[in-house]
Image (cartoon, rainbow, N blue to C red):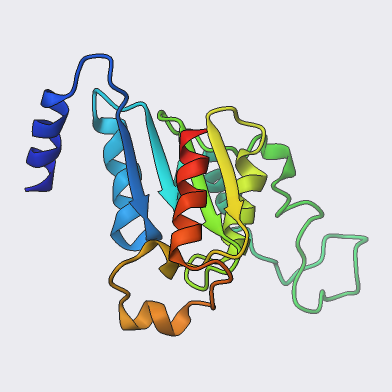
Length: 185
């Protein structure tokens, strides 16, 4: 399979060669790459094109999700609210995640996340979230290619991707050159 071919290719590389895993999209490409790369002995980095490090790599998210399990009670504490609390009572700050510390990912391999501003599949809001949680980390860079959509990186475009994607302002050639520039710099 693919894992066997990757190991064969790695064995042929000179000892000083850098090894980077690159994946596109979150259905297979970037998702698979981010799961496999940390398990490899020889990998220098991961490039996620139209993809992102999943929230599961951010321990602060799991701690925050546990706070949201707290639900309002129907009884008001003495001295708070009316005799009954319409909709229930929840103490101030019960869902406040800001005190949980960093939301940065804990991921062993350096990453470069590249998103397109016109990607209709992996939306810019998700890339913005990646930037917000990773911008203070020297190991996890995030970049946006203005005008690039999801299809700009594909040669064969599945119908559902074409349907959901936005129109590119760059075209595949320009977008691919810009992505290549980001990877090599």
